[in-house]
Length: 347
Image (cartoon, rainbow, N blue to C red; front, top):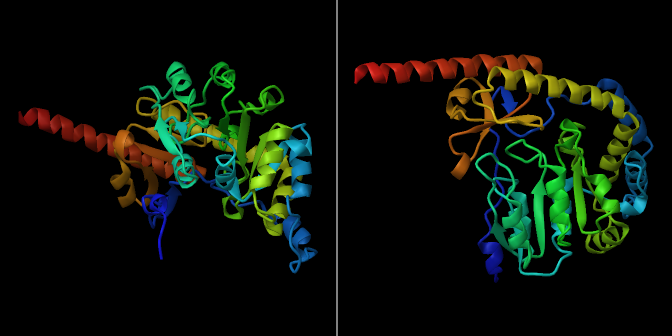
């Protein structure tokens, strides 16, 4: 058996969860669905014909998503998580490489490599902002550009005028808005003007159903037509499609939880502003090398290699979880300060 060299050289995605009491490491919602929504979903599922395939292209969900965004069904493609739609989108464009702006979501590289593309990096600035001119130079001979706004793992959203400036190049831009519900700064309306824009969205974050694996892409009708050509039929199962439709019909309940998460995010940020980067997501990147310390306290947070090795990414949890986090981080900072002072006195 011969395995492709490109597959041999791939590094599989890995973010194994530590066995901790408090899980603040994967940017999930801290809440399961409210009981009234679960009951509505179960009522819908009772009448679902499990022996039948779902709609080949999730027609019903696409219609609801189109209404939700004041678009047409022909502007929407549904998928099993937005990750799956990254894999579809990268297949559309001709060229030998794609451009990413690290630190950013690792799956852009993974799916691009798998599709046969090389990946060119244009790193973010020290303040985690874009380098527009360097990106323009890079995408001139590239197939596509991936951006995440708000960016994972830094939490900051990029300016609309910069995104428009990059779209003006005519090069395909795949804009991941997984965390946009926590910022309110979506660029979806730009698909009406730019047919080189694909916007990715997910139900895993604000909607709180990461386990159901529901995502979608929004783009011009022409681009969606091509996306539908490269995706397999029945790529979203009937259960997940039903869950998504119920959530869209009851979005006000979800929005209340989003507001709570934003309030808690701001509370944590204000307490540790000296150590935190500005964020418009449901997490904070913190300039504290506290991963191991927090593990000992039963709190799991995300640690990264390379440029972010001395930082942690903290997902906003419930109030009780956030209280524990704040208390533990205060203890960490105090112990670090005491150690530093002791070292100075020793000299």
